Length: 259
Image 1: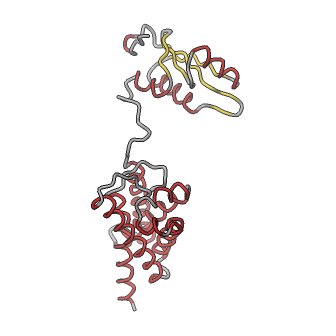
Image 2: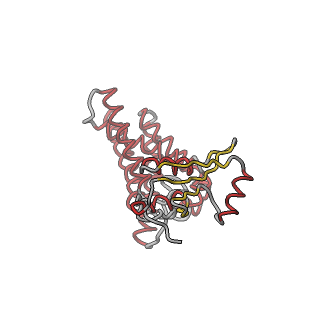
Image 3: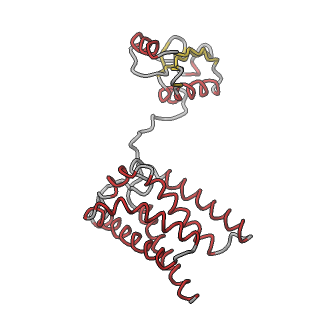
């Protein structure tokens, strides 16, 4: 059935059917209502108050999901369909599409954290300590991503890490080692041990990425931000490991000069 575009509609009115039960309020329904209202539609909101009512609605309209939006008697569809229909998105985003957004968001935030910390404690941001804090904060945040789903991380990590493939337990230890190294860099304590840990895992990680991507030419997903992110293995992954190696060398150099 042809569905009129918004500019063809005779009235800016829409009917929205969404699940609103005592134990579940559909987030996509809330977003659909908000999107319609922001686009100037008067929304005739029809909350589905129970699971039985929701199932009856889906059966009556031959749909598998809610929410569902109708304009001028024509069914537009769910939230993704509504976005496309309103011209908000050219196409529904592919859930499996690779993206660098998680890593870029992480590095942007840790950079701002480092600048804020340096300004708070040193009164300036143009110091080597700002760089140290940026790398340390990044390691800690990336470790959290890995630890929130340790099994998912290890499943992906052992597909390319040369040591993790041979010693699976190393894959489970890696996020903890990264976190310990990051915390040690922030506090600047136990410098030789912290630097040794960072140098060890960073070197193996860098070698593994180079071998998997640039030598073997494998198309893999990176485990740097956990096992469920669609970040491609490559330059970003290599950067994480190179930063650890560089920071470890810098810490050892500064520590030895201070002796």
